[in-house]
Length: 214
Length: 214
Image (tube, rainbow over all chains, first blue to last red):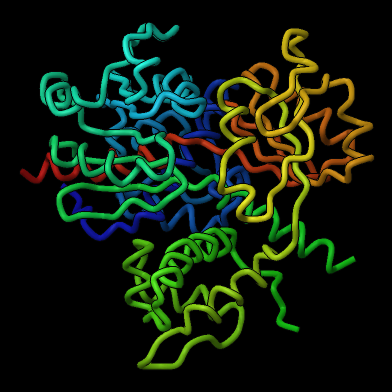
């Protein structure tokens, strides 16, 4: 068994990103990909690709490249993405509605098994996805009964921390927070705060640079 | 002028992420932060923080730390985030509606100046944000007239590439794509494909590791 304790989060994130173009290449019938090509598709440098993958053992053949199907299978193994994860979502506004029906989650083994809101007008509603919106008072029981491991927060910012606290007290193991506020990272639970504007900042940085070089 | 040509995208992304806890610290009245503390808040290692910031010159005082306000101002300068950017959004489903009203965009200088859809039932609708949904046939004219630099795609996956092509032909400089399909990167335009599941994969990786270590 390979020791996997000191692998940086950034490597895990890039490994996850590598799988996207690999799936596309596999769909196009491409069998072998070089680290240069994969790096180009993911906008990192080839040395980074080789270094990231080297954390998990020896992949690929020098001068030839990686077997696309084999590499994808290895990435799935690394990311435990052959497992199905039970998720709940709290906050069924536009963002919550968009995420609960988003294709990528299902495709990657992330299954929403419960949806919660505190708005009396929403509680009891049947969603097109088949979910019925539950009151947040049911969070503790349903997390236990449905074996929910990851909670997704799409509440307004002022409700996000209290929602996170309730999820943690109910035994959730990880939280993905989309509310525009940083949820505190406790000892007991993993927290990821998603901020769409990080990607925009990256685009803006490059646009700004282009402008100033004209 | 510092040469900024070889700065990796990952550094730009982390610099953008550093600004989030820094803003919170500033709001709490904290004046100085060590690279260790900042690294801890951003879940990277302190050497990474120091290396990332060193690309842009000398910040901080050895053994003391960074001046929070000064560091934030420098990051804003690096990311050109003191500039306002004009954005349009294409596809006013749940995700489009969530993004056009999302607080983080406005707060960081990203201003949606136009909203497009091809659904006759949506065209002409007045949104709570003040926008009126325009038909996609108006994309070329409005990108020019309103000086729109960045296009955000929230269409269904099958429409995403055609939407990207239309935006590029109309002179857009950068695209942020939220549709669950990778939009091709042409020569003329920057493309960022956003995939929510990368963050989930990172959580799942750590949860899977914890389970197997029990």
